[in-house]
Picture 1 (cartoon, helix red, strand yellow):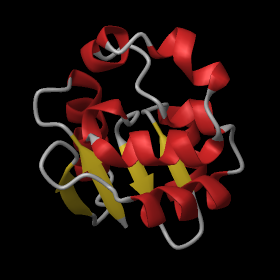
Picture 2: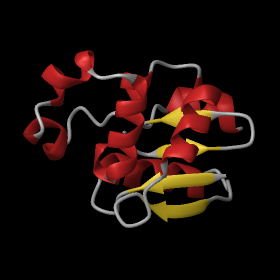
Picture 3: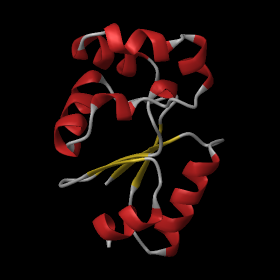
Length: 116
């Protein structure tokens, strides 16, 4: 299981604590320095079953600076994947990828259902 996180993100800290408290093993990946590439994102999107826009960190500074709320509706999926792959700070975090599932953000009930 791969967990893409940003060390200064409080949601990521809560998620990692939850994983540790529940004895779940994971590979921690710094989403800023070692962000998922386009292939990883495409595979994760396909496996997740959620809309591509859910993969964007809509509360992030970069998202707001780039005014993506206005731009995303006009972009193709290919353009969105390229954009997400360009900077890990655009990706919603934590991003968890297992053999069977993809989790975006930290919702304890969802994580309990999928990971336990």
